[in-house]
Image (cartoon, rainbow, N blue to C red; front, side, top):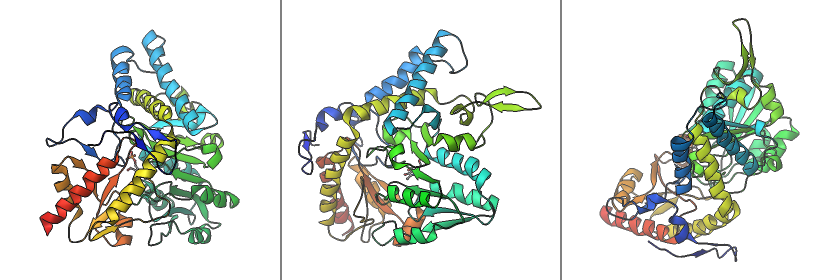
Length: 419
Ligand SMILES: Cc1ncc(COP(=O)(O)O)c(C=O)c1O
């Protein structure tokens, strides 16, 4: 495994000491099948730096208590740590207020919240929700459930053979009946970066709010929700080097204020009688029950880690690896890259002729090379490209050229086995 500083040729001056940085991630000290781990599955979940693990352990060992409720020392301390994380998230995505940062289980729950709260209030029979053909199931199924309930329609913006959003079709489909646009920032199956700024601008010209699924963008590129002007932005902590079971819904305060609660329970109320319940203020109105306190604190530590490195630097590093990886993959015999958009981030999806993706993944695993194989929770994308599954190598801030080289070496070996 290569252990050297990576210099990004496309952005001279932006250097990245990968060797030093990899030491922050204890998983890389764990052999897999007797080999050094080559982890190329960060789109599924990222590995965690020691600082995130420490933050979670610190909560359980030094400040474990329920939050927002107790007056005792530990409860106040835990509340402060949790709320500091909320402020860190706010700053990271440049939201106007912490009232706009709802802590949830992840991107999936964030999208379901918008579907069930905004959607149930505002969507009327015959109206439409507009998504794209490259969405993760998390940004399809919640809208199908809602549309079924409301006798509304789900419309889909097509993609082209490169796996790019077809903007002209979007402009045509975005009509007077559209109540919401919900679109991914970056496709998990193809790596396509969508032109969300333009998508939002056009929707707003027509008075339609936009939800951006940021599950695959937040960890790869700077996100400024005020500059984007998106109405909602959803992401998961575990894909940005944080713990599982914690995620964020950003929503414009005006919209969140107008929306009914998503779930009922403790913490989301200001008073309860059998006759009438008054709801808590934002963001707590949407946070019923004891939250994932350790997860929230861990997410704060993850964002601190990423900020310390600089998201723009991470982007530059991964971009250089993408270029390297794409060229190396293309040089293989009988490979088909699925998703060849001009703008891509950190995902290399492909098929090798005559070899099922699952076989390929299993053989790579024997050499400690972890990739994802399957439909990537994006079955409509697989249908579009007429493949049952793809192999997907996805990058994180800790990957090196040696990881790519190991992948290519492993793929050649797989081809040998099937020859
Ligand atoms: C684009 C996209 N959206 C949503 C999700 C759902 O994220 P989670 O399972 O963390 O809620 C994923 C997960 O892979 C994703 O890639």
